[in-house]
Length: 190
Image (tube, helix red, strand yellow):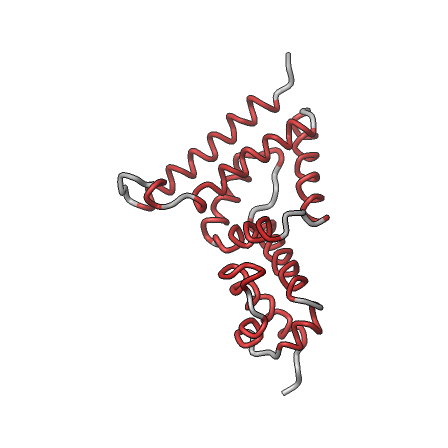
């Protein structure tokens, strides 16, 4: 059987994702990643150069997947934030990976900055608001979208309601608050 470098690289990305979500960059071990990927440690260095570069590649890969699952729609910000919320609830690991990145490597990558500036610019163009106002709105609504995964179960559902019903109610709150925030902060003064 011939060696498939693309398959090895994909397995390393998948195994790296699991390892980094669980342990962060500092706690992750290349030997565990290699074993989980059915590869050797040298393959990590061959394809990525370092554990840090593998982490960045994993994060970039997962953010691309997230962008495909929840494409940015500046003309329907509440719909976008609802889709983003759904994607983060379905795969909380991508949010955890981003949190590890922020804790361990506080400076954003050029790609992260470009992505956020692009979204703010698109939103500003779609609404006629300033890029600064659009940036503020995005920061506020992103915080709401990630709130479910970052809040303990006992706090987000203190009365022990049906979990699916509670999740749907919070999602609805996120979507409605996004519409209200956008209306309040993006509308042009008359």
